[in-house]
Image (cartoon, rainbow, N blue to C red):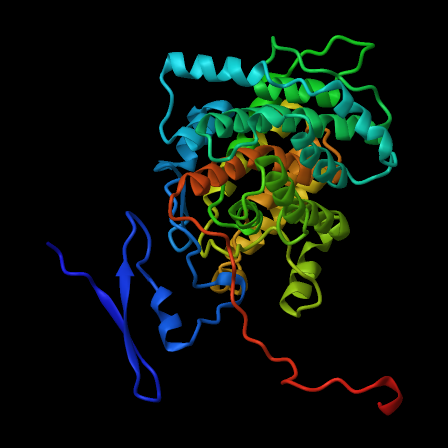
Length: 428
């Protein structure tokens, strides 16, 4: 039997403790620090740069090598060969489905895309100019008021039904948020369409004309959903897990994930990258902007990543998709795309960017693709939420099924006032 490896921590007062070391199937080892409380001390790790908050079998990232695996499958292979619902099945169940399982899953999700009619009336309570993400937080959270028959989180069947409902209904809610925002009638889902075709139909169709999906554009959005389906313990996923650790229902947990995703440092990155390109304005201004970045006058959006210290593996897939979409739409000479390519060329050859590992990430290209698809910028983060819903559900389900899980309760390093006594107001 292999001997348990340990790391020994010795304090300056002479006390020491042996802490068990743990290994995963991939990635760096970790030190189990549960025992530190015996010494009356805790670790300090703001933003969790060096802390594993859980064990998980779902997603693996190697930032140094630029790797992203869903259940062991490289993201590049899935984006090239799979469709979004097949990836959803994989994340949720652990393995790719066979032909029969795939058909059953597709049919199941397709027939859950309708939302309760009363839910549609919720939209009238929002201003027309409300941000679609604000609407998403409210309406997705409200799902728990309509589906009381699947809220026992300790019942695996209830969890499965809730997962199916969220996966199927979030795209409908998202498309309705868009339609409400622009003043067009809701387009209810059609079972004849695939998952992504259906979403595009609900987004772009009108009662006045027949809608025919464009296969190239459908495939592009399919890839965007696949690339954003999960990304390990990011801010929104950690939020879903933390909310779920309290026993909150899955609809409330996913709503909390949507709220976290709304932040510009998380889900709003592709919108920020597109805005940067619009601010640069013309290819003739690229050199001046790059110098401004070096002088810390401007901030370079869509380059570099908190986790990836090499090329974002999703970026190459998105770059290829970008070319396909613009060619299909006759936009190869698109001003922003040409500007982006000029910026990309400089960033990949300039020592300043290479030394700092500021490579283009998925957000750099996805904003251009979404814009070409006709999706307004205020819907960019909503698209992210639609794709990430399956990751949130899978991570939540994994956590609830873990018999050892407890409510999340981080510690703190208190730096406020020491004890002091109350003084009456007339004596202060």
